[in-house]
Amino acid sequence: MRIGILNCGGDCPGLNAVIHGVVGAAASKGWETIGFRDGFEGLLPPGDFTFLTPKDTEGILKQGGTILGTTNKGNFAAKIGEGDVARVPQEIVDRAKRTLDQLEIGALIVVGGDGSLTTAHQLYEQGWPIIGVPKTIDNDLQATSMTFGFDSAVSTVVNSLDRLHTTAQSHKRVMVLEVMGRHAGWIALWGGMAGAANVILLPEIPFSYEKIAEHLKTREAQGYTSSLVVVAEGARNPDGALATIDANEGAEVRLGGIGEQVSHKIAELTGKETRCTVLGHVQRGGTPTPLDRILGMRFGVMAAQLAEEGKFGQMVSYHSYHVGCVPIIDAVKELRLVESDTEVVKAARAVGISFGD
Image 1 (cartoon, rainbow, N blue to C red):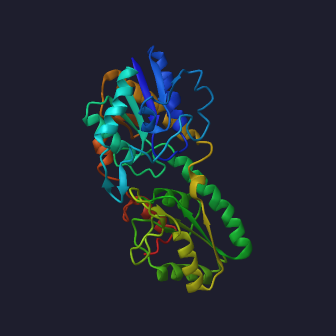
Image 2: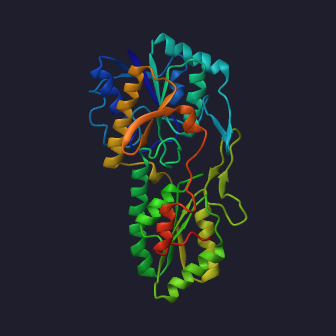
Image 3: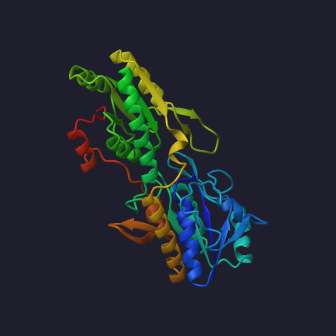
């Protein structure tokens, strides 16, 4: 068989590990692997692709990003707003399918997040031999308990908080760190807990500036001279509004600015000198952690196995330390969000972390 692989959506640590796993597993079966550049766009005639052998993927396990490139724009974008989905025009689908047929691709492995897998499922419904691999640093797909890239993003947050802690103590300041997390606050929650944050603000838990100020004042009365606040970019202001940078027509709005807003209100209500740091795309880049390397490689190997078994329309998943599969439709129909009464949140509250509620 000849199989294809492409990456869609935002980049994250571990993508190259998936490619390494797919190519190695395919070669062991005597198959050829074709990598399409820049996601589904690489399928459009005349096609932008490269043949991949184990020699081509040697040494990429430790590299961040993806050797194939990726995009969250273009002809195949599925998400056009919060919760809104657009179907890819049939003319675009037909043109891409001709490339797939001409190259005699027997299985197409799509590595992507919620939006990319929504597109992948549309193509599967039209007869494409699709296999999905979940990719999101937000760790918010309901059908898998963990996605590669999440551990690396959390590690970056923790490293940043460790650094902010020392400067906060030196200047007796409140330091606010804005991290990624549009709908789900898993990065903020795990990173904040591991980085000893005092306040964690999530998209799922409504917060009050007065409650935050009260918590920080209580800490100061107890003798603490500095505090750390972690806020997910999708955390909503008390009036329910998101902090946005801009909104391009036909795309989801770009979030950003909640960290500065929180910082300003804390300074206003507490009188404490407060500074904000926006971590941004630093969370997406750099070397993947050992966990993400192994998980990504295992996902790639399982994707090749699903291709061998002809299990199209399936997505690789991870549950109870086991890599298996679930239907793609189960992955894209519902996000996995942080619940306010979950054990992890209760543990955070038990050690004195405030969620501003």
